[in-house]
Image (cartoon, rainbow, N blue to C red; front, side, top):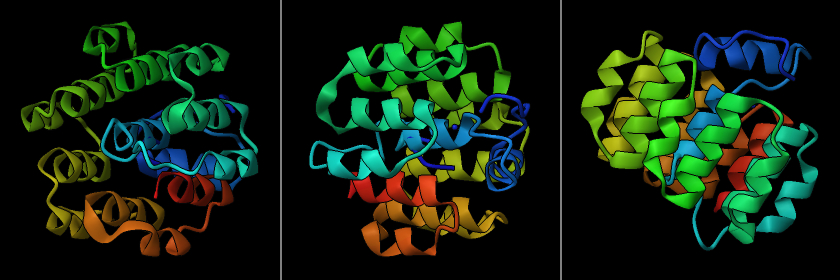
Length: 185
């Protein structure tokens, strides 16, 4: 989930698992970050972002990513402790899609490649159905794909990223994700 996208004790198996980990207190894992990063990934984070919202994010990795995407630049990516998320941040904020190759998790790597290069064909390599639908929606900027996402927070993030804007952020139950969403719109 957002975008863009996040602790580290939960294994990444897609946005749905990430969201479960996040909402049950296991910490933030990446796809949200990836997604946040994707539009995370370049789609979600905009030059008009509100960096003040980043301060409301409790997870230090997400907070650093939010700040990086809100205009502070790739130097903030260095504060991210998760190596996959750090590489994702550098790829999306710095525009260097070669950083995607350093991501160990195959789903996250495919998401990074798809979103930094706007290549929706890479979305097909993502195993998790919700993450795959999100990837296709943001790379094609097609909000109709968001309806295929079962996880409610990711669906709301998807709709925000693909055109509905900040009005969808209020439907996100995770406070960190909601702040990430609002920081971008």
